[in-house]
Amino acid sequence: MDFLRPAGWEEALAAKAEHPGAVPIAGGTDVMVDLNFGRRRPAHLLDLTRIRDLFEWEAGEESVRLGACVPYTTILERLRTELPGLALASHTVASPQIRNRGSIGGNLGTASPAGDAHPALLAAGAEVEAESVRGVRRIPVDAFYTGVKRNALAPDELIRAVHVQKADGPQQYAKAGPRNAMVIAVCALGLALHPATRTVRTGIGSAAPTPVRAAAAEEFLNAALDEGGYWDSGAALDASVAGHFAELCAAACAPIDDVRGTARYRRHAVGVLARRTLIWAWESYRGTGRTTEGAS
Amino acid sequence: MRVTFTVNGRTRQADDVWEGESLLYVLRERLGLPGSKNACEQGECGSCTVRLDGVPVCACLVAAGQAEGREVLTVEGQAAHAARRSRDRDQDPRQHEDTPNAALSPVQQAFVDAGAVQCGFCTPGLIVAAGHLLEHNPDPSDEDIREALSGNLCRCTGYGTIMDAVRLAAARKSEEVRA
Image (cartoon, rainbow over all chains, first blue to last red):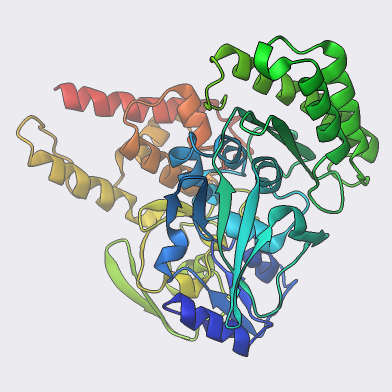
């Protein structure tokens, strides 16, 4: 095994072009587990932790550009206002030790259906900045997840950054699991209100082969909010609206039975989380004079 | 490969390190520092917690090569680290504290006094995590303590005495500051 230690981004791209099988490693919270248990023996490890700009983030007009290695701790401490949904999701990641090392870039690279960041990225709207020696491209996060632990990256590409849309309304995130820390999601749900476009977006984790949006649920809710004049009136949501939205979110799942939970439980829990997060977010939209502040 | 980094204030070198090896293995098996414990090897238990450039991490999830040139603080270095910090504080004339070269850090002493140690396997990781907490938050709430220690599993104590120990260390620190 070779341990490649590029000092800069160009060098990292060159190394990945030369060794497409090289496994990128940053926080190590996924890769080292596989190495420790002998599940993976790649010919090359590509250490990204020497590349400074991967640890930097920058808030622009519309979005926040998060370097691929920015740890969860930074997101939950520094980006609560701009990225409330992702900050809430980051807070549910494992433990302080893991949050100090793990990053969104790693979550995307692993592309586990249970990755905590995915539902928040889907709900907020995000693009993955992928690059190779051939050039750079932006992949919408909706198109990024292609299968269980599979993503849209080409073998010579590396994730450089993630561009996440800044919140224009309340965002929520909820996760089901046996306790607060060290939990791989049984299922998770992210929800973002976008008053600017009068839309609601969702993301569901751990309840299908990939993280997914509940498209039919979003469509139903967008129409119901529009027809009911809710965005203007700021009225309390009709229980039947929240209820049907929850049913459609549950229907968007294609879960399996596994050690963490049954398919039936997951579908049920996603419905509960959907109703709950919708009501939290909507109450916050009504209550705060419709500011962009997310609930926490 | 060769890996050179600072451990508990001293430059250390390890040779013939396998490229897929963890920092934890290097510390325990190559540098003779068995304080950091090896249990789950997947970041679940926190018994290998060390500080890497000041930040608590699971040493089992850091690739040895990633530690190159970095600073690592293990449980073996806690007492000296605490004494150094307290000497630095003594530069401040408002503080009168004299614990140089103590055998135990205040957090370690509080664990002993509160009876927070049973089998002892999780203790080193908890000492490192609690030490970091109190450095950054000298007066933590119970919620803060639970959160800071949420990545460290203990199967003996039920955590009650561990909570007591951290509260005790914090209380002693604030008494010293008032004195």
